[in-house]
Structure formats: C-alpha cells, structure tokens
Length: 260
Image (cartoon, rainbow, N blue to C red; front, side, top):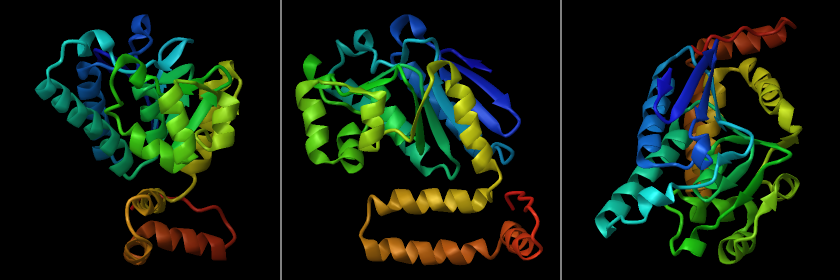
C-alpha cells in the first residue's frame, strides 16, 4: 500500500510503515499525519496484525521534524489545528493496544524525536541522533515532546535539549533511557524483527493490557492505576489465551496464543 507520504508493507502479523519523503529528510506535513492516522486506524481494527514498525526512508533520517515550508505562513488558527492533528497521531500510537516499535535509522529531530518516543519501544541505528531544535526557529513542538521527554529522561535533561538545541547520539540516548537498543545501521530492521519475534510468542491481549497500564501510570495517581490494573487483570481470565498460557505452563509445553 502506498499512501502518498508513506510506504506500508505487511508481512504476516507485522506492519511496517515507512515515512517516505527522503528528499526532505522525511519531514512531517499535514498530509503525512492524515496518512498515519489512516494506517494506524486500519492496524488497530485488523485482528491479524500484532505489531507495527515505524521507520524512515533512506539512510539519513527517521524524520528531521515538521515541514517548515508548510508551517511558515500558518495563522494562529491553522497552527492550533495542526497541533491538534499532531496530538491525534501521538494518541493513536499510545492508545492502540498493540506494540509500536520505532526503528530510528538516522536523524530524529523535533517532531521526529517526539514520534519515536511516543512508540512503545525505540531501536536505534548507531547513526541515529535525537534532538529538539524547534525553539531555534521560534516555536515549540506540537507533538507532545515537552510532556513526554521529561518523563523519560528527566526534566533537567529535557530542558537542556530544548534550551540549547544540542543533540544526543544513539548511545547517549540509550544511556538516558530514550532508546531500548542500539544496533549496527545495516541490521536495524533485522534486529527490530528479532525483538518482535519475542513479542509475538506472548499473549497479545496481555501485552496490550500491559501497554495500557504502563502508559496510564504516566498520567494518573498510583491508586487509580492500581484499580485499573485490578480490572484488566480480572479481564484476562475471560480470554482463551489465559487458559492456554496457564495450561501450557502446567503441561510443560509452549503456548499457542490466538488473541482471543
């Protein structure tokens, strides 16, 4: 499937979505965001799809940020609408109860950095770089970076990146907890798929519930998170996967999960 700014490829239970504007370092414009929402909705609705990989076309960039040529003449009203659209993309990533993995193949600046950090896991090429340059062009990010980056790396480190414009190489981003794993550039997708293989043998409903609970823990007080955990734990016992997983454990065999 080709959706203007995206290349979408399905391989069994895995959907790979590639930002496909290499001529502008995969900069994100309104059309890109609409395309991402369309694909994410289809991914959410397809019971056969288990994991989504988000990456960038070419060797230079995951995404260098928003498309400045499209943004430069926006009015206050148009900028507000764009920010709302950007947050819709982030909310889709965070609320679909399936794993999203960012395979960061190069520059991830501004909106690109925010898109990568919204994903559940982030696998980085050794060539990847992360940064938050929007204040250098007179704006802030509309992709949630000011809210999520301090939760991941701490407020002082986040302020430093936003205030100074300095960037992080892949290994530094890993040390700060922004990246799960750094791999050789030419093996990025293969290494990402190795992680996916580990995810696919686990019960999909339980994985989805884990995502929901961990994400909710970042937004609510502990007692509310505990109540939600109790609710979703009990809900697991309505699934066939719970019966299969526990019986397989007792019978000393590998479980076969169906997502039911």
